[in-house]
Image (cartoon, rainbow, N blue to C red; front, side):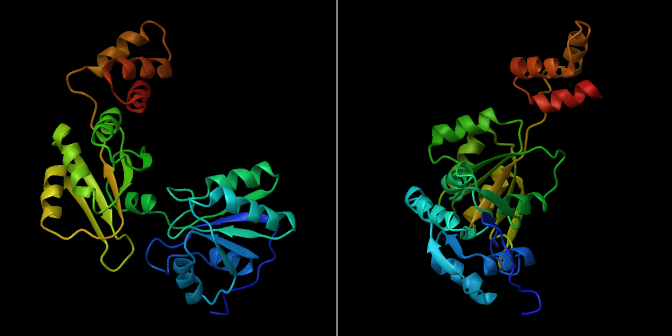
Length: 276
């Protein structure tokens, strides 16, 4: 342990440190050394962060910092920086500011003229993406999806040509999937549950099949979902439309915007067709 845990000489800055999303081994050496070397760590729940720090023998001072105390605690951490100290920001799991607190502190720190240094690491979104097949690199992440059924419908309809990724609670997973299935019963879905943990589960398939599976199995743990993008509408000859617009001297980006607006298709997909 002592061979790789060192005391870094850190500048006065806010270090945004990614921590494991489940398996405590999923942390970088740089993150460990930064957490050991900063003067104070801002964390969501000191009890959760203590588990990680104890594993690696880190005894840096912890101060709670969560969404209900962001504005008040930001002043405290700015005082630390003002005295030439270094501060680390962590969330309970994963990368701070990705559906976790930190936006207020980062903005205040930058506005005060101090550096914000990202220490990269685990993230549930990229963990899921690296374990499922996709035809396109494009995706759209929206954090936690709305609890309101009408809003869920609007979000899914407006993003049907996107690989749409979001977090969801196990208590609401089935109701959310059932809402989506009402309008898109053939939608392909990928679900990552308890990623990197002992009972990790990654399932990909038709949304109706996924719903039946989870009706028959106990739902626990943190969940990340991707709704696969629909393909371009077969009722519209996109290639023909592109050809006609090209004869008018329009540029590829202009054509992709026009067709996307008229036929409710993904402009990036249209653009790719334009340049092929």
